Amino acid sequence: PRVKLAWAMKAHQHAQVSFNLISSVDPKFLNLTKVDDQIYSEFRKNFKDLKIDVLDPEELKSESAKEKWRPFCLRFEGVVEDFNYGTLLRLDCRKDYTEENTIFGE
Image (cartoon, rainbow, N blue to C red):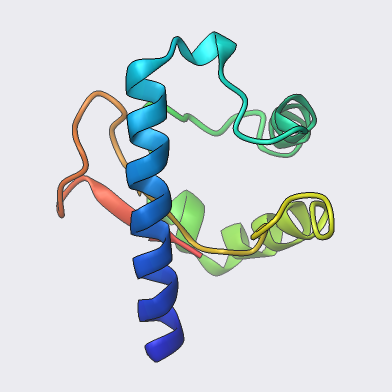
């Protein structure tokens, strides 16, 4: 539980920074890592049918989903700092970060 709480706190800090960045800069000119294009390409290869505008928690948290997400994340070990940290995701991208619209992905 303490590790999860620490991850959640770190994820909240990252979410605030990222949200401030994407709110102030046109996202097409924004790179959060040096390998954003590679990450997105790999993401789309592995999760081609995943809707990203409105997320289904089951597609992120179920055991079968975790079996897909783990190998995907491990590809970036040593490439992306904090590659295995949890992150806060808005379930509906059109809405703000609220308790009802936020999920912790780990």
